[in-house]
Length: 212
Image 1 (spheres, rainbow, N blue to C red):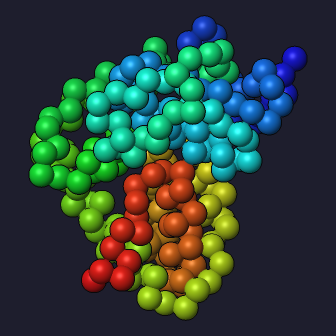
Image 2: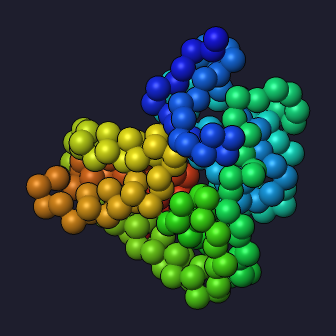
């Protein structure tokens, strides 16, 4: 039996329950994705989260048009056995064009809902996500000007726990929102916390540092 990754749990359509992932090879998780844009964003998120847990995470997919714009890094493999199959459980997504917007705003719009929910995104939805992403980058750039402090571990742990529980990205983003409003956390710590979580979320929150 493979080693159970107790930190990461995903919905299993076969059982109808959220279950722990048990990779066939200890320390390695292989994630296969359908040739569909939203599925590959979800697969990329799982790969980033698994890397956070110090697993060797291998993506298995044929990159579809637009995936790299939405922060999906190229897969290591195009075929082979997998521990996780992303596709059937991912909700339908019918986005409007994001031309003229930051493509990562579409990624943020996806993360603002659970990956199993159907999403008919309109241009208004994507424009709102674009504005939100820009606001986040301004906050992070502002925090970067303050003296460095260690990340606020309670926020990191809470956000990662939400992501481990079937990729609850809305709850993880809510942690970031509360962090921003928490006056007890120094700006330098807010910066390091946001950067650490963005390594999983993949929103390039540091883009405006030194540019304002």
